[in-house]
Image (cartoon, rainbow, N blue to C red; front, side, top):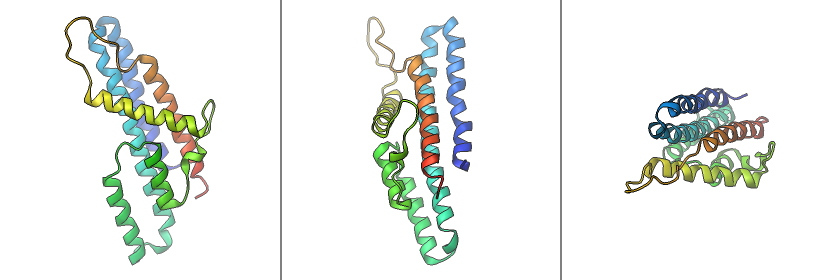
Length: 178
């Protein structure tokens, strides 16, 4: 198990905790609890983003061990650092590209578990990232009249957490032999 996965396992607990708080607060004040589901999806996908960044650094560092301190090792490390500063919202394509570029591994090909194959996993991840974008940038429309449907349903957050846990396990497994 990678250090990045251990950190992810700890980070994803924030989303689980937000879901538990939602359940508690919803009983007293449903309208005030909705923000917790949006925050939960943001935190869950932030845990994924951090995992991808940490995992690529971890794997590249292991590969560069033999050339550590050399000009080529320094060049690759600095290039990765620059690339990660521009690496946001790690959808399936960006994730595939960074691992291919630095490790020559298509991690998305290993995204297989339970009811997911690589194509469905890629689509699900991309859909979740779109939902996170909406949760962040379009949290609550200011409209008169009855409120619209909630952007993040309780079961959506629960499924997202389970999905991301499976995705991280599949990604770690795809990189295990490096």
